[in-house]
Amino acid sequence: MTKDSRPQGPSIARQVYGEELRLRREAANHTQQSLADAVVCSPSMIAHIEAGRRKPRVEDARRLDKELGTDGFFERFLPTLNPSRFAGHFAPLVELEKQATCIQEYGAALTPGLLQIEPYARAVFRNGLLNVKAAGIERRVAERLDRAQILDEPESPVIWVILDEHVLRRVVGGPAVMAKQLRHVAKLADSGRIRLHVLPFSIGSHALTPSSLSLYKFDDAPPLAYVEGVRTGQVYDDPARVAQCQTAYDLALGDALSSQASLSLIASVAEEYEHAL
Image (cartoon, rainbow, N blue to C red):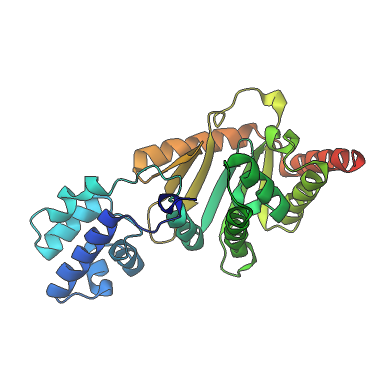
């Protein structure tokens, strides 16, 4: 794996933008709390911007400029913070998963990363990388499993999951791995840890057919959407684009099987894999 392909944190542009906000805030004798009160947002949102993890909305940037007397600086430089495609830049989303109060996932062809068990994740990385060493695969598997720890935390987010039936039928790692993976997802749903629905083949085309999708909601910040493809992914924080993604998710949810019917289908497919051993 090359240096450029390693997960990275906030972009340089966002770090510089955040540092500028910190300097201007301190020069104006504002704390994060007092500035947040002045521009009508939360102090944690100010902290996220200063750390380079989030960018303000246009109206927030305007209020920052007005309060800090920065002559439009924070609004003018907002376009430079637009997120880039980031195969190899997934680290910011790991932080968003920890901050989110609600995560809505759609798996088009694979079980979403948060729900993957070790042998399933290993098979995904082994089949998706070229000439990668075993140590590289194991590191990626460990990182993926570390993300799943939020499922065990008392303050972890509410998680909704829609799986296309392709996820159930596509054999990743062999029948034994598939049986264990489906049983794992079903156990999470049975325990109430996640809300699970399946989009069956019988539905045909649906609103989420084109790609996988993740939606993130927060107590103190606007929602985000993440759309992922082959070796690429993009975070959207434009309110109109996020709303379009949310609508697509809601439409697909309306077409999906009920939670109970979804669990019955998953159990049935898992049994098929177990009988194939």
